[in-house]
Length: 511
Image 1 (spheres, rainbow, N blue to C red):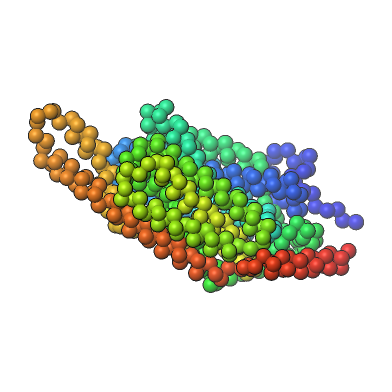
Image 2 (cartoon, rainbow, N blue to C red):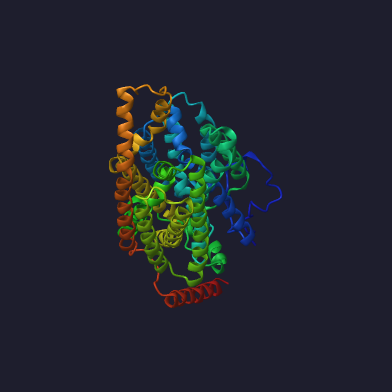
């Protein structure tokens, strides 16, 4: 009788051989404890990757001052970084052929080293190079990490798993705000301190991934797994699935309406999220007069509430076995709170506590819509071809990065006053040095006049941008409609019961 393949994660002879650190494929679908462990590692490294990517947003005002960098220059760095990241996402489609785990593991090594090197950048051009390289790696990992989570999570439980994966960018942002809020005052408001901290964390995460991150062999991951009850059938079919996997013309297979439209929809829906990542700190300091540390404290509430909602709605969506009703409900809440947020823009004396309430509810709306979307999207890709999951996610990642690239390119033209306001601290410092009773130089008076005008114009310009975000949120509802999945929990339960009977029949026939 042939022996079953050994699960490398439980073999006592594995050790830490060099071969094991490169060959990470599992020959059998892991049991529940091991599966949760691999999911936990995937989520942890995702958090760290996004922490590294988003750290610039938490110290943007300080960094701009250090490099004497204009707001437009900073935004252009983000534009190029996202453009490069978009094609990094496309390149990561090779994960369907070459695997996911090594792409993530050694990506962590690259971003950790880049973070530690960034404070040594002698000028803003070198800083830009480091940021763009980090964007390239993030674009790849945006595809590889959710592919890993999909592989280890059956469809019944997919929203919960994707809720935890989505904690990556959200908790990454939360950690940026929390660490900056707590540590900047102890490092004399030095932006470089945040890069040293995140670089060390990144290298620790690399060590964790090197030892603990694994992936399914192609024959296992190339099948649709509805529930853990399918495990025996999936393992029995692994050899056949690997031989019969259709990997021809992968892009042509994935460029379909039910993949392209939802990918575009969620990308525009997240405009306000990516605005928060890159600009909330600048917005809160310039529009409401908060310090950088205080602004990060307000941001922490946004990310925390978003994280909580992502997990809770994932569990509830899996229990009811529907996705689309949550997308609609979350969008309605997001639209309402974005409008409320918009109305406060022209009230610069709005308290921090009021801002916290507004953005916390906004964050909940985004979370309620996004986790079910992730689950539904991966399930839609599986319907098309489960062997090309990473390719489908690569299409989404490319569209997302392109949309963010276009948004970041457009924002400075909509909120043109921000370029002047980011230079305000330097001009105001020069004004304070003018001796009492001495007329300020005409050039300084001219700069002060520009700042005064920009301060009056900026709130109205930001309102224009928030209206763009509202329109994008509404568009999401229509673009997500082609996704797979039921609207009715009753119909979804009936589908699951039919599948269970079919699996029982096939399993019985195989025995």
